[in-house]
Length: 189
Image 1 (cartoon, rainbow, N blue to C red):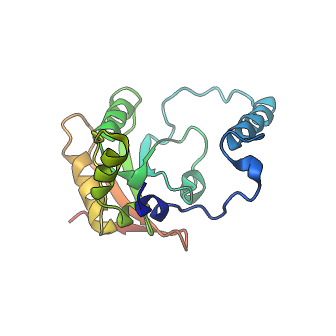
Image 2 (tube, rainbow, N blue to C red):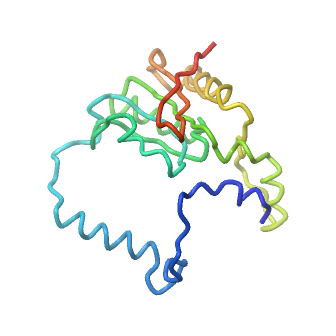
Image 3 (cartoon, rainbow, N blue to C red):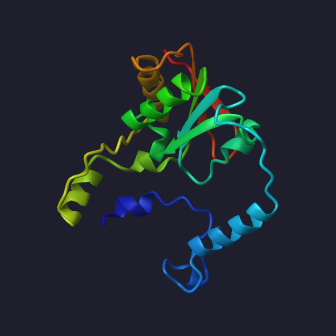
């Protein structure tokens, strides 16, 4: 694979123990399952349904530095959270937002990109490199960008103009600063 993959690494720490390797004696997935067992032992059904209490859907980047619930003061059941690389409004995000609005009652959309995003260092050449490696070109676009503010504006426009979404009046976009934890709102104009 190309050096583009290394550029996307955002982890604050790298596993130090050999057992952290995939397929190792105690893989990270094993630890996640173990942690779930502890969580489930203390779990009490909150008695909620799938409709978010705050009637908001948040579309954000998958970056591990974004703890959305903590950063936005949200609790379990408050919102729908849709995440992908870059927080890009793709057809699949529109699908999820459509279900969120039409079937589950959300009325607001918050779009959150962030500083230092890995997509700022990629290009569509990433797809070409994948094709050369695996023999098949991905059907999806990388959706790389150079200007995070402009990418947020584009995302807001995609949501506002989707014919499938019925609630497009309260669509706002932000850039989360990964060094300060603050949101900066982006003017859609």
